[in-house]
Length: 407
Image (cartoon, rainbow, N blue to C red):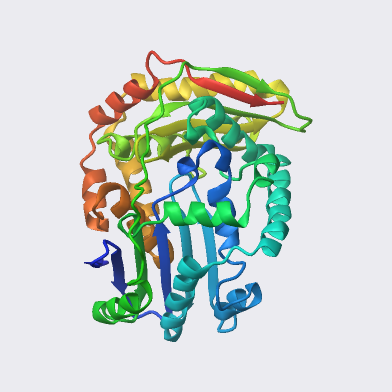
């Protein structure tokens, strides 16, 4: 059983540690801020910061930052979501202090030099253009734009080429200083060190983390009317998302919907939609159901790509499968298999210690607690067929699914 050891420092910064005898160790910092916390003129700033943190500190140039972990066979990476910015590194266990010192340097001493800022604007602009060339990815951001309208949750994470041009070293630095706060940050690690040793390293490198007098304030997005939108783009396939708003992270129904989503169109090739649309009718290469969970809201949807001639038949079959979940209770064997499959995926995922500690950090920021694997197993096993049907009815019955097409 995995044991999460925790500690809270005087400045409010919290630590999660898994003592692990593996030859590989992991260290990360999860900042409780993301693209939804940007002001309107800062669109794309959180993601841009993620890039700029690697572009120079008071004592290091970009090459030295990239080489610090790679010289010893380690990796360092970062990513941005709507609610988090994550810095993380994996490395041979003897280089634990090296990783902690480097990530602390990026956090507190990044200088956002003007020359590097100009270069990185071009890099991110190319990333945006590349993303727009991929309709199977672009459609998810476009769906959010319609789903959340003018709310910050509706803005894509990358920003736009136009918004990038407004960023300066001062505005970038001001954003970073305004957004990060020890009380909304988790440092997380897994490695062959005991808690006392990790605490010592954190006190050495993170004790000067200043408290922020401007706490992040978030507002729940309003519920909007269902929409049906078509975006014209020259593509070989038609791409479609059918979806609706769903439960946020604190809803007691979220596990129910996770089970239903996995059953309907999860990663398994035996999902209902994959068997129906791909295996039986041969109309799609890819079809998936998704449930995006945020702190105060969520999205449920189904994505597929098909020939335009098969578009309406695919939509009809998807609607039929979704309706079936609301109208028909799962039988004992069906619910047993659905739970077993989801739990198996969760258990396999727990072998990835890097993902595990970062997920635990996000849970601590949102829920102020971490669920152990046995607790998750118990909660999933406790779900009844009636609860699943009630959840399906709440999400699907009496609602028109919104629809977005890229043709």
